[in-house]
Image (tube, rainbow, N blue to C red; front, side, top):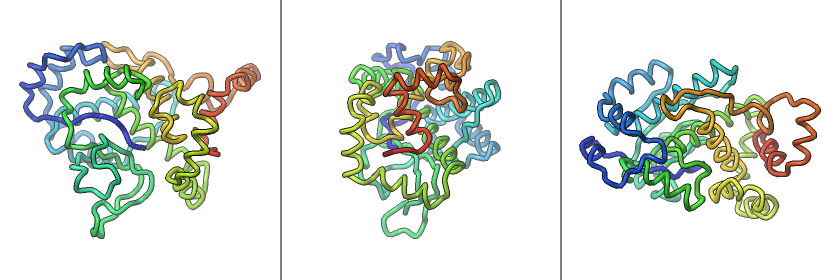
Length: 282
């Protein structure tokens, strides 16, 4: 549920002068120019009008990346009849001030209500995305390349982490359609149990590590890592629009043909991912 993604710097001139960006992760000069011209308040209002309250703390890169991810998910829904539900809210925060175990993580999608700050009475609902304001988000392209090279990500695409967090939100909404709320909460809480995670890693580690090292965290991270790669591979990198359905075929297609079911039996990894996607975490 946590993601590895980096911090925004409000000085867009730093983005232009960045010398270690190599564009291999998809952050082209054209996209960087678009980010430089970003009006954060305008994007914030746009997302609010779409039913997603937000606060980007003036961070151009995070605002632009989240807005673009919303656009891509909506296009996937419209063009291919998908039902990828968007997050309820998106916030940039200093994670040192939050009630989280690791303040250095780059982001997370909250899957169960939690106390936002220690000693606070404010509880955050599920499906809210937080991104950490501690990191250098202007390095997103080179960081994406490094994470992929070190096998901590399934793709080097610079939108990998917003994809990852949005997928968590979409999957939880899907699971709410499949399970009673209390049953789902038990399933989500099991993902925090160290013994359960140890069993998961022992049973599926050899399979899911083929996706990325981060997929070893838990079954929902395996799904998010895999689907992030599939979505990244389904879009035109030039104009960032979907050109094919990342859910076509196994393991995520709802109705499988007889031939696809046979293929599924012959693929332990896809079989596991299909179980995880449908909330079967054991």
